[in-house]
Every structure is written in C-alpha cells, then in structure tokens.
Image (cartoon, rainbow, N blue to C red; front, side, top):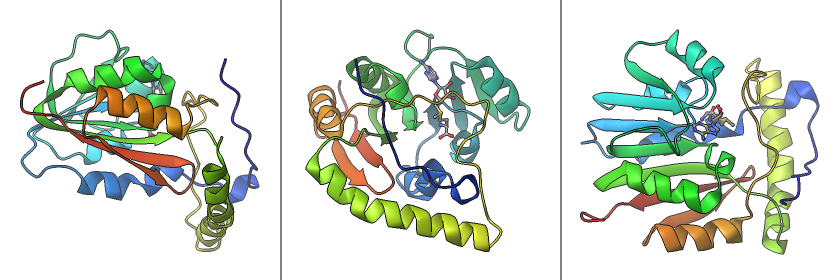
Length: 210
Ligand SMILES: C[S@@+](CC[C@H](N)C(=O)[O-])C[C@H]1O[C@@H](n2cnc3c(N)ncnc32)[C@H](O)[C@@H]1O
C-alpha cells in the first residue's frame, strides 16, 4: 500500500491552486493544428474550456463535477464516466491535469496512450509523492516559494481555493522514479520533468503508427 503524502500545510488563507499555476504552460504545449482534444479527469472543466480545439471532450468519474462543468459551457462534450472503461475515440491531444495519480499508474498511462491518435500529443501535469533526497532538496525551494506565492496572492486580493470542496482528492501518488520508469516503458520517447510545487510534467508525441 502506498504511504500517504505528508506535507506542511499553509494556513487556509495562504493556500492556492498549484494545478492552475501550470495551466498556461500546458496550453503552450498544444499543437496549433489540433482539431480534437480530450481532457481526462476534467473536474470543473477549467482546462477543458481553455483547450481551444474544434472538438473538445472532457471526462470525469464524478457525476457532480460533470453536472457543474456542463452548466458552464455547452461547447465541450462533457462525459460522466471512468476513463479506463468508457468507450472513447482517439484525439489529437489528450490532457490530464492532476488526474493521473487517481488511476493505477501503468494502466492509466497505457489508456492515455491508446486515446492519443497516432501523431498526436499527450500532455500531463501530475503529482508525485516526495520520497527521494532530490525530492527533499526540491522542497527547500518549493516550501518558501509556496508560502511566498500564497502571500502575494492573499495581499493582492487574488486568493484562490486550492481545490473545490466537492472535488475528489487523492492523498497518495506514485513517486517520481516510479513515474519515470513506467512512462518510459509505456510511452517511448516521453519527456518527464520535475516541477516546483510537488508537480511533474510529461509530454509525449505519439508515433505515427502505434
Ligand atoms: C484532483 S482532480 C483534478 C481536476 C482538474 N483536472 C483540475 O486540475 O482542476 C482529479 C479528477 O479526476 C477525476 N477522476 C478520478 N478517477 C477518474 C477516472 N477513472 N476517470 C475519469 N475521471 C477520474 C476525479 O473525479 C477528479 O475530478
């Protein structure tokens, strides 16, 4: 069984959304020619609404998330379902923001690869569990930066909720070495990068034939 992530929590008013922090980076990875996109574990749909492809589909296992997301836009095809089993097609772009750790790692990666059209792109921003010395060294930067950003947001009146109270949050995640090993096995040529704020990013260009 995976250990629960233990993390020094900031006071409520200084907490902020680490996933949204990487959204602009994620959007910059989108190929300009993408005509179809799938957002996996879309939650309230903030990312799905920004994807800008001609056809955007978003799936979440929570009926409540999909109900609330669907009330914000009818330009996205919102699906209530489990990404692992739901009948979905293939997409030019597949995104997963803070949702891969909700899935069994290899199964989740394999499924994301299946959903990515040959020649398409998979973009993940995910969470990893602090486990190694390198992770702890990164925390020497992350912890003060986390507090500083929270403080700046609070002082400038831009405080934000780290996540919606109705959103399913999982307090465990694979470690970064586990993620790297599995990703290289399942997604040849993948680029995995450690990021600040307990996040990593992953970009995979699906081969033309896979
Ligand atoms: C931490 S939230 C992230 C939501 C959103 N992507 C964001 O960044 O705000 C993870 C989401 O994944 C969804 N989820 C978990 N398991 C799933 C599955 N098997 N299929 C589809 N969605 C799933 C949860 O319901 C939850 O809304």
